[in-house]
Image (tube, rainbow, N blue to C red; front, side, top):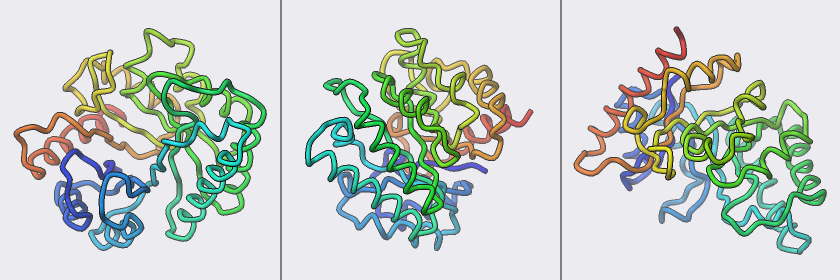
Length: 261
């Protein structure tokens, strides 16, 4: 199954975006579940995506306030309530999973029992609603994500592996090789490329990731049911949306071919 994150660089109305994604050959989508990058009602996405013939793999929830989960403050409880509601949104829209960050940015609280307890509540609520929650590895700070995955062992909480984030940080943080440590709990993929320094979010094979080695590592997790999903948001200058998506589909087929050999 070949999927794509719906924000593929070109700002378009949802209905047109989904039509072009399906026309390019993709089977499904991952949705951004927030209104911070569009004036459209993001909750219309599930209906519009399915009308275009696309499956919905997961939602990616906003992460700008996630650090509050590690803070002993009323805002931390409000942020927890927000993520519990996102799980409810998944269940109500028949979406099987949500992707979230365990932290954001550089100014972080240390990992602590309060934050872990709040992620425990998220995992418990996910179990009650029958929704998976995938914690994403990041390019700068991964201690919080590793802490959560190490201490909360439930089938409803797992890993969203981001290839670009790992490639940009692997030389600085080799201890956070999430595929090696948590690949058996893989729930989602964010596949994109960069040049090993910045989080460029360019198409696979346009950067310096060794894709045969990367895809082999993904295949070795044994999680073959997890779709091959692109998440790119740059590298599109000079291309019409249709052309960009056509290139993306070709790259997806290449990756999926490597994965299934």
